[in-house]
Amino acid sequence: MAEQNADALVIGGGLAGIVAALELLRAGRRVVLVDRDTPERFGGLALWAFGGMALVGTPLQARMKIPDTPERALADWLRFAELAPHDTWPLAWARHYVEHSRAQVYDWLLAHGLKFMPAVNWVERGLHGDGNGLPRYHIIWGTARHMTGRLIAALREAGADGRLVLLHRHRVHALDHRGGRIAGALVIDEDTGAETRIAAPVVVLAMGGLNGSHEEARRNWPPDRPLPAALLNGAHPGADGRMHRWAAEHLGAQITHAGEMWNYAAGIPHPLPHFPGHGLSLIPCKSALWLDHTGRRIGPEPLVTGFDTHWLCQRVAAQARPWTWHLLNWRIAAREFAISGAEHNPRIRDRQFPLFLKETLLGNHRLVRQMQRQSRHFLVAGTLAELAAQMNQLTSSHDVDPAVLQATADAFDANFAHGGALENDDQIRRIRHARQWGPDRLRTCAPAPLQKPGAGPFIAIHLQLITRKSLGGLQTDLHSRVLDGRGEPVAGLYCVGEAAGFGGGGASGRRSLEGTFLPGCILTARAAARHIGTGQTPP
Image (cartoon, rainbow, N blue to C red; front, side, top):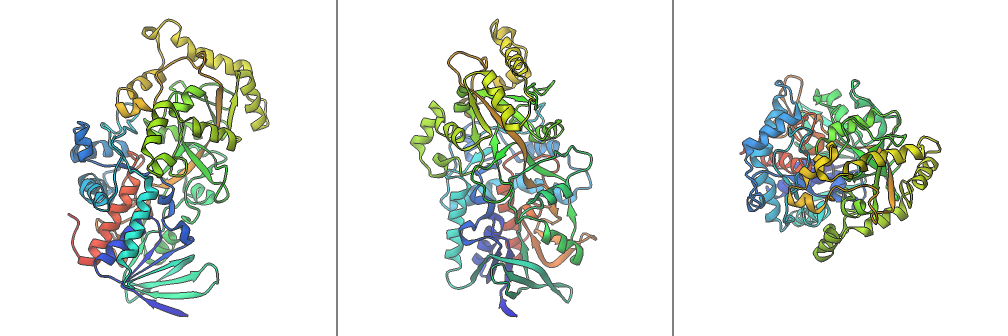
């Protein structure tokens, strides 16, 4: 068996693994980084992510007169997360996040030449104001793909003296544990089957979450929550939980909050899938009517995005069929329709500010036409009756009665028959509230009848629940050290990013304030590297 030696072995080539390796190289360590994917996919899900980050107390917030503080952010976090009093390490990581996201993430990224878009968005407000009490959602200019490219370039530069070894298309199948501590790992070349032993006194687990396959997602699904018959996959298929279970079975590591997931309620199959079951996560249009499989509006409380994603997912999962519908018109789609990630946001990804501004002000007709052309789940018709026929054809059913679909639209439009003073619809109230904040106003239509003359044609989007991120993982302390059943560190073993539930084995509890994942990767990775490299405690 071939053998390599290093001061530290990092398992996983996503954002958390890249940051951990970068910081370890800067601390003078020799690093081997093992990644299951191909070289062109180095960066994992961060290559495809949109780049939104929940950050606290930033200069950008100050410029927009947002009076945010760590204390206020922590209160929002804990209320939304519903963590239990005994969740010691998730609570500690929540506090660490809100206190240090400004310096450890925002300032650190600026120091790498990255920039944020000049607006802070307000997401996950909570159904009753129990989420983000203030706007905190910062967006990387260039999306997470640009950020990942910058950090990979910094990684290669830091390891240019030969202290970095990158092993793509390699998989760790066992950790080497000798004399009561980690001594490295056994690695298999996925293409040749050859085995290599990496000797290292420190191993950093950065292999992603637990739910990269339907089987794993279903295994971890909480038994007291509705589970739809079909799911799309928005996670990385390599995030299969294998190393989590190995560490638990052989080293006594603790997997906590495994059933907590950050899924999304509005997914469609990827028109050009990268793997079986690959889905796209849509950013649902606030002005679209969310319908069940029969074309009736889901209620009594209407489903509106931007307030409580966890609640949305449970409502969608509880429907009689594993799909729902969005009913909207072209006017709404041009202003509001978006797809999460770098792939379908080229103006931001490629930093084309004039074109981004044009599409924001005049509507993103380009994306709407693209999805009409590429996706059979994006239906367009001149009349509601024609649309109902297309909906039934897609699902091979007669579920949607054209008269029911017409009645659904008529009932909503009746709110506008006598002027705004006589509106009485919770979706309209939420839209008006969202439009009070400038960045949301730009991307949210003023309430109007669905059948407003000139606003057509009509659009129906066939939606499914899509898995995305694990909120649970291996339990870690504030140094990102993996803890055993006694709460003691497993000597030499660290865990960062989604593999650690973004800190502590589940720092977000049941709900994320959204945008906590990329910063969570950076914070946990930097904490591990700091402790490995210098022995310093977190600030």
